[in-house]
Amino acid sequence: MKNNIHRRQHRPLVLIAAGVIVPLMLFGVLIAWQPAGATPHTSPELTLTYSPAAIEEEIVMGGVVTNTVTVTNSGTVTVALAVVMNDLGGPSAGVAPVARPALSLPTSDGNFPRGNTPLSAGIATGGSHLPAGEPEIPRPQLAPLGITAYTWNFRHGSYYSRFNLNLPEVLPITMPFPSDGQYIGAGEYVRGRVYMVNNAETMWEMDPTTGAILRTYTATTPPGFENYVGMALDPTNGTLYAASANHNNGHSSLYIMDPATGMAQMVGAIANAPGLIAIAIDGQGNLWGYSITDDVLLAIDKETAVATVIGSIGFDANFGQGMAYDPATDTVYMAAFNSATFRGELRAVDTTTGNTALVGVLGETLPGNVNQVFWLGIDTGNPPIWAWDTAGSTTIPPQGTATFKVIFDSRLVKQTGTYLAELNFSGTFSNSVPPMPLTIHVIAPVHGLDLSGDMIG
Image (tube, rainbow, N blue to C red; front, side):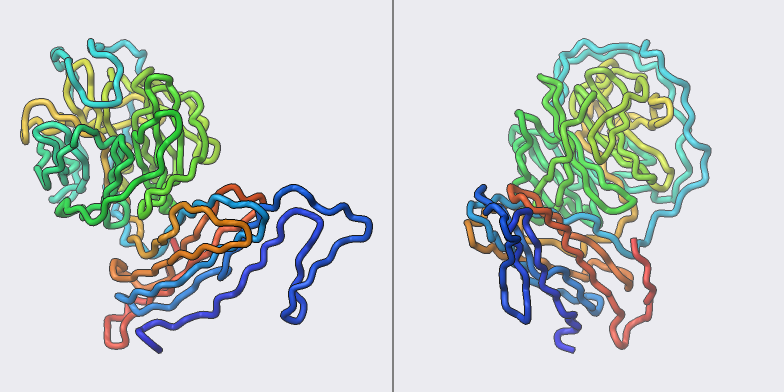
């Protein structure tokens, strides 16, 4: 064993492009076969292959290993390539649920107080305060320290906040984070890191405890002058989804995003979702969002991006706001901004009727006055980030190659076992390129505590 790493053999992959001429490997020699009478294929070939076919390593906990992936364009024209890492899974500490009655709210008839501000997905300005007559619902009895949530508050100089979900009135200033004229419309807690992206596609990776910036980079630019309005981690498989919207024309889009690179692979335009402002994914993998145009809760299909209206959310939502799922209470929450009361509010969502209930006023005690948070993140108990790649997006010339690194890092891993992921390839190539499987088997040190157990997420 060298450097605490046991390498497995990497198998070469051969992909066959649609066409007439089929390459074959015989006794190590590449030959070609063409059926008698076949017409030669004359259109440009856009054939992509990668090697190795899969990466599998056995690593002692705390170890890091880097592999190189080679991507080959054997076609006759340049191809564009994007690589996204998905389905990071493995042993997880999980989040213990709290016994509480399921949230059950009557259907809202849409008759609720309205504000007097123009529709906007940005900074809350110009509103008047109507009397707040809505009572707060009883809060779940969480652990003494509560459930930790994460957000960015535009008000009071703009700052990153790590706060107790059971005490939304207190939004501590964890780290000042000026907006520099932009707003940070989307963010999420992802396996031990916080990721945020603003309306200029600047993206940050942060230490969730201190708010320290670890990296700054650029996310994929959404189409049609859309801006990112939400991120949501799927607790069932570890996939990060993102959404963007243009509230001037009502268009919105859904993506699968690689948080390590900011690369977003579009799922599709979100149908029936004008004014989409935030998204969340519950413990069953259901994707939810809501509209500030129609003030309705939406169920969004993760494969087709088609949205279905569930019902009225029961308040006048406007300006930037967020949404997240709390596994401890099995509840979807909105970090909302109520245009009628002109204040930020934590609201619980009944995903059956679409209606919501007030939990508490965000930042009412600290820092006080009006507060507006643009996103909400909660730890859903997923395995930590143990792999990333350096691919991003690139182009490969005809008969050319490109290489990138895949890094397996077990330093954030707290449990031994098998961890699985995959790399997905998209671009202008014409052949079908399967995902690349990634696997690490994390084992305990020879003299360490034996926590072995093969749990696959």
